[in-house]
Structure formats: structure tokens, C-alpha cells
Length: 226
Ligand SMILES: [Zn+2]
Image (cartoon, rainbow, N blue to C red; front, side, top):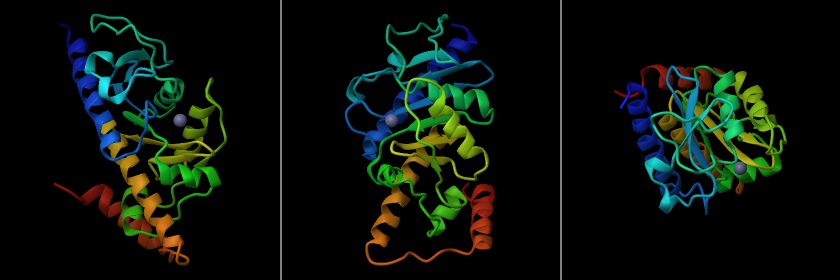
């Protein structure tokens, strides 16, 4: 097996396992939702196949495509499956955001409810400041089928510290340095969307001073953890 085939084999295992996190945190139903990873140093990505249930997903069914979403053959062997219907959006992000190594999409309930109203989730929790560095922004209305979802994600996230965007009337897309970081952002996005929603039921959540948000974000991104 070539070095590249081995890298892809490991990424397929990782991306397959990360899909189980989407169901564990109840971010997806049926076959909705998808995780992808960039193949480092290559014009390739791996992504969930279209229409395969989470219970049936195995590493060998994860599809390898180029950065335009076309399945790419090689000694890694591609399954006879189409890539996710959201592949064009993921591919667009990898082409235009070179630091992004992972992309996740879900229709998780609370984040999608904010997306349905076209309302950003305001930064009213210290954990939001940590993870998102401000509000979770809303991206434009865009239909599946061409590059418009990918363009909306890139345009919205380029000027933002947030790794999550709520595509209007659709749901969240998240990015990260790798697929695991993008999954974490998807989990945290749903968590804060739910908490701020609940807080709203009894009044107006209190804003956090922008300077405090910036300081929390810098500390968490640079110094937190092991
Ligand atoms: Zn979707």
C-alpha cells in the first residue's frame, strides 16, 4: 500500500468514527448530515456516501473525491457509491479556505431553528466567546446543486472568528483544522443554540462586552487544554 493509500485509509476510519459522534449527540436523523476531511497535501478529500444509513457506514464506504467533488480512483479503492449530496459545498470550502481540514453539516434542531429565522445566535455565554469568538453568523439562502452553498459558507466565515455558520432556512455548516475540530464545532453550535433559545424564553440574555469576548476567545484558542 502506498503512503497516500495508508493516509486515506486512516482518514476513512477517522471520518467513519466521527459520523458516530453526530448520532451520539443527536445532531442528525435518518441519513442527513455529513463529515468530510481534507487529505493533507493532496487535492483530495474523503466524505460520507450519499443515502447510506449511519448504522451501515463503514470506513470502506467513505468516498474519496477531488476538490470538485468527483470521485477519485487510486490504489485506495473507491466504493461504488456516490458521495454525499453536499459534496460540492464541502469541496468549495476546501478550495477557498486552505487552512480548513474538516467540514461538517447537520440539521441539528436548535441551530436549524435559528437558521429558519435567519437570526444569528448572539454571544451571551462565555463558552460561546471561547469557541466562536462572537455570534454564530447567518449565511445566505442557497439551494443545493451548484456552488452557491459553498460560496455562502466561505463568504460568511472568512470575516468571522466563528467556525460555524447557520445557512438561512437550512442549517449549520462547521469547519475546523481537521474533521474532529469541525465535529466539535457542530456539537458546540447545537449546545449554545439550545441554551440561548431556552434563556430567551424567560427574558433577554445579557450581552458580553466585546473586549471580554475577544480576551476569552484568545485565551481559549491559544492557552486552554494540555
Ligand atoms: Zn442540509
